[in-house]
Image (cartoon, rainbow, N blue to C red):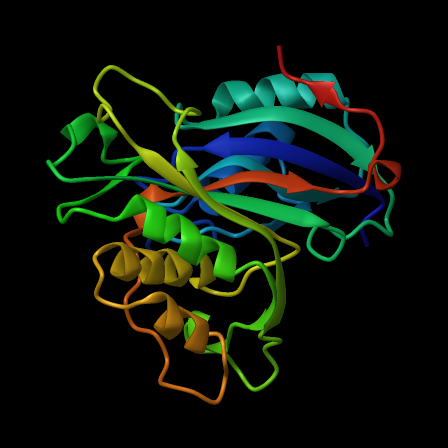
Length: 268
């Protein structure tokens, strides 16, 4: 049915949305994207599909959205109108034509998430959309040690909310690191803040927030490094329950092989 295929790259502040995926009666990012595409095209003969679907209140610096249409579109004109009509907390950055064999989900090679946080005094309310604040003191050096334990191949079954019988829980973490936050700076942010950055080909439901939750428990010294190691062994212990708050999480980047993509048209 679909004859033309385009890849949109967008970014958004997720604080006032109930995630990406459509949900009846709720404001989601995909709902706003759908409405805007429909307004620009002036018809509903299209479909969208996204990679890196985010949960409620989670933001994205780089979301990939595949647009399926029957008629070809002028890429630059569409991108300009699409970006102009999106809400102010969603921005369209580029569009490119892709082949019908491209799959926005299966062709993703690497996803990078960042969890931004501070600890101690409650942060300024204006930073609440981007940075989670943990009121207890956190041992950052211990958290940095713990983050490295996630790297490599592990069974992350305990780090997935309600995995199905078909869920592949064996995952490879390419990079896992707690570092000072130098990416997002504002005069109302905490004087010192950090980001937990983690990279993999793919993540399961709530996996990053559960990983961050274990690092927070480690930083509070409620668990130790040996307990964190044991959580990566499927046969030991119960499913993990402490999920870090959503608002600190952000999809930072989503990478595809260059040869799979064409030339970008970018918004001005």
